[in-house]
Amino acid sequence: MPGVTKEQIVQAKEWDLLSYLQTYEPHELKRSGPNEYCTRTHDSLKISNGKWCWNSRGIGGRTALDYLIKVRGMDFVGAVETLCGYRAPPPQERPQPKPQKPFSLPEASRFPAAMLSYLQGRGIHPELLQACMQAGTLYESRKYQNCVFVGRDPTGRARFACLRGTRDNFRIDAEGSDKRYNFSLLAADPKCSRLAVAESPIDALSLATLVKLSGGEWRDSHYLSLGGTAPRAMIQFLHDHPHVTQVSLCLDNDKAGIMGMERLENAIQDDPELSQRVKLIYRNPPPAEHGKDYNEFLCAHTKAVREQRQREPAR
Figure (spheres, helix red, strand yellow):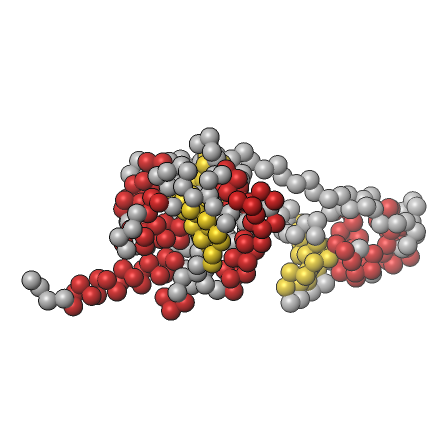
């Protein structure tokens, strides 16, 4: 073979891929199981039991020589010289990140029966559901019958959507969503000074439902879902609603929620404008004896009311 000897070929074939990467490119290795590795560049390329297989391409082999030729695109002579130490390993080409798809809302179902049944089963009051549907912030997707919670910017443009399964625990944000503009339920008065912050849309709706069931006026406050515990949606909402001066932090009563409320409070205090404007910040997690979040609290409350009514003698 021109350029390399038989002895060099034999020497090159002694390199298994795991040993080669551990020696020359340890940064490229990532453990994917107890006895399995993958590469950081190609996470579908698995290495185990002295073999490697690039699952997404349907190719594989045993040796590092196979890898350099089939995956890295080297010619045979160059690959042998690399493994014999006569040539430096070629630089690894990093895959280009896929461009993010533009944001778009899933197609709506004409008959949102599955969504309404699911959310009412979670205790959400029908009046709130109708208000959200009229505002264009809640609907049922035609495909899979998911709840779609929509976040809009101050101009009314949809910028965010999260999907929640009506038959299972499926949940995902629509691709291209801007999490600064999360789902919210706005007060009747645009100049309302109060904001209640929850982790999820269902918790935000549960807060408003609890206010209504207690005889209060739920439209006397804004309600905002963070889509987690990060502060960005709250900070954006406060800047978009300059009349808010009171913030109730109603995150889950667990470790993540407690730490999240501290982060939210710090985020307001670290903002030069908001630290001067927001005069009252109070932590208001749900009572621990009823579960970790406000929907569990709402469900426990409605169950207790129902049982109390059943015990009352008929008049």
